[in-house]
Every structure is written in C-alpha cells, then in structure tokens.
Length: 337
Ligand code: SF4
Image 1 (cartoon, rainbow, N blue to C red):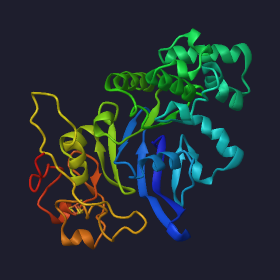
Image 2 (tube, rainbow, N blue to C red; image 1 turned 90 degrees about the horizontal axis):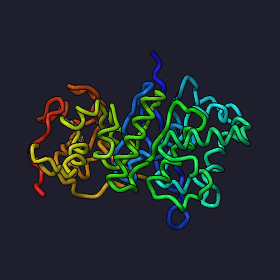
Image 3 (cartoon, rainbow, N blue to C red; image 1 turned 90 degrees about the vertical axis):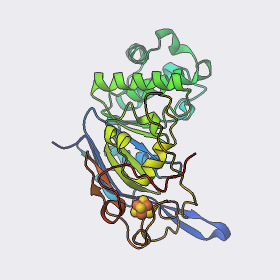
C-alpha cells in the first residue's frame, strides 16, 4: 500500500546574504526520506536549527525544495503548482506554535475558522456558521465562542481554535509545528489528547514537530531525529525511547527529567563543542564536533543509514565500526550531570 505521505531524498537550500553582502548557501534539509501511513503520527525532533520546521514546510510545499519527491494523499506535489496545488492543499494543513500567526487578531473566531470554507468551497452565511459551530464543538469549545476575538482566549484555547480552522476542509494530513511547545505541561497534555482523539475519529496522519523528545513521546507511533538537516535516526517510538542507537538521540533523551521513582535514572550525556557552520559543514558525520564517541572514520565519511534491531535505522559509524550493537545504550564516556 502507498503511504499517505511519502518523502524521498528531500533537499532544501537557502541562499542568504552574509556579511559584506557575500552570499551564503545553507542546505537546511539534506537527503531526507520518510513515510507516514494513514492514521499514523511521525514525531520529528531535533534542536532549533536542525531543519525540522523547514522539512514540515517543504513537505507542504510552503518552501521550495531543490530536489526530492513528495507525495501526499496520492498527489505528487513535486509536479504541482498554481491552481492544481491550491486544490490539493485542502488535504494537508498546518498548526503552528503561535496561533496568532494563523489567527487574525482583529477577526472573530467565526471569521478565522470559516475563511478556508469561503476560499476553497465558497461557503458563507448560515451553512458556514453551522460548520464553524460543529468545528468548535469538535475541539472542545462552544458555539458562543464564535463571536469572540483571539485575545479573549487562553493559549490552549487559541490553539484549539487554530486546530478547528485546520480541520475545516476535512484534511487527511496535518503538520503540527511545535504546536504545543508554548503551552504549560497540563495544557500540552490536553491539546495532545485532543489531537489523539481527532486522529482516531478522522484517521488523520500527523507530522508532529517538536524540539523536546518528551513532548512527542505519547503521540508518536514512530520518531525521526534530525541534526543539522539530516535524519540521524528513526524507528518505532518505543525502540527510540528505550534503546536509542544514535549518540545525539541518547543525549536528547538523557536531558529529559524522569520523575518516576520506579525507573533508573538515565546517565546524562552532554554534547560539548559547537555545531559546525551550516554553510560550510565538514566532511563526514554532522555530529563529529560534539560527539563524545568520535572516531577517525567519522571525519572522513558520512555514515549510511543502517537497520537497527527493534526497527528503524541509524546513521552512525558506531553501528559498523564501533563497540555498540543494535541500539544498546552506550555507557562511556558519558558525563554525569
Ligand atoms: Fe559520533 Fe561518529 Fe556516530 Fe557521528 S558517526 S554520531 S561522530 S560516533
């Protein structure tokens, strides 16, 4: 079966003006491939600047990509532009970190939520109003909220309104870009539960982008970890959390505070050093300047993705040249916090 979202060899390049007007070319996304089945959630995690948000935007063709193939719900986006692309956009939506970026602060909730209905379906008047009320109720709000303005709501409620707007056209795929990152933990859980419920009800597929592995844990079926534009590891969420194979994934996981008294505390792995300049990365592994396990081969050759026991792949020379095997957590030289 063809997956709902199929991304192959995606590359995104930005050309920026540097100091003294010298042009800088930054490859923000490098040879990224993944797929998402219908009703499935792929968590995409990495630090700020890892390329995860650019990947999400490129998949929706909101930023141009230099090369690669993207297909969503049977549409080959690579070949589409103009009116043809606009028509298939109804199948794919985005929810942003800051609902103010998608909600006009001077427009009522009804106006914001009904805008896609008007633009795509020409729907207005009582029929549009009825659909707005239906959508608000779907996300746990009430009909009387329709005539209020975004500033009258809490951050969590505003994110619910943004989700209602994203659902207006019955999409099949939603990119949630740091959609809960600005919320407190209890509101995060409520919004994640809402997204989970909607996924089950409408068989939605999500690309759930976050910088924090703890946030994506409960919503993701599979997780992909990005560093400096590359996917360095992917796999089933359970395997990633219990047996991370890549030193970068291990470092991200070791930074999560574990409140449970019944679990052994993870050893803290600190990544020292600086990330390389993305405009002139060194040859070899992108993590080489910060990795505590770096070897000579890491500075010479880019590690190829290798299957990991338990599912998924990891791009690290330790899998083929080092002391670790199949996703077992590394011990030394971890640094205790
Ligand atoms: Fe570290 Fe080398 Fe693996 Fe890169 S390939 S993560 S530098 S051990």
